[in-house]
Image (cartoon, rainbow, N blue to C red; front, side, top):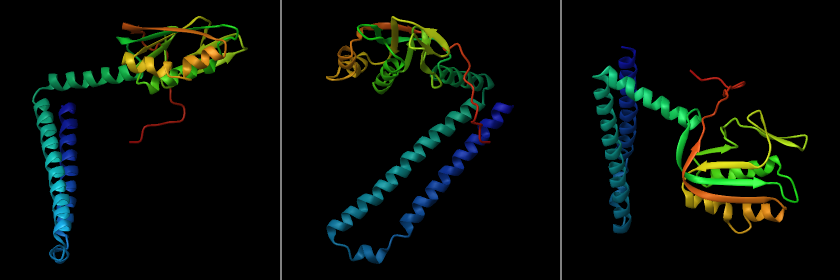
Length: 229
């Protein structure tokens, strides 16, 4: 019953928003200065007509999308089991993005170790940032999942703390994503690998068709943020 009520509210709200958008669009078109159009040159008139047609095309697209979504919601309402399944799928997807589920996919495995100089926290932070920029969907350091709240800090110049756990080298970083993008993200000229080598630190990598990244095993707590109701 609660699921049906929620979907009914969503349908009503979506329809209301769409109606307001349609009203605004048509009102704008209705208020077009006809006198001004009559005095336009042919080129200007064609441009204005093209703009108006684009507005109508945009409205038609929104109409079709909204009708499809409403039809989907109505179909879901007919079966509580289907509604529950959809909500469950959305929950699982949210957990995956938050890092609460183990994942597998193609990607890259990078190993960095001490050379003439020791690995420091910023070496890991920079690498994580480069991988994210290259489209990594999931990342781990020594099998510790990197999530939005992950902290990577140095401890007395001897250890690196990740997610509150003390790690030591070698540091194995796994990332899931497009192999070509991930590889190019760290192999660009004067990029991450060149910088590591120049700083006397060792790094190697391999692209892998099946990278397994474990789920985050901590708790994500918001200390200062609350949900707006």
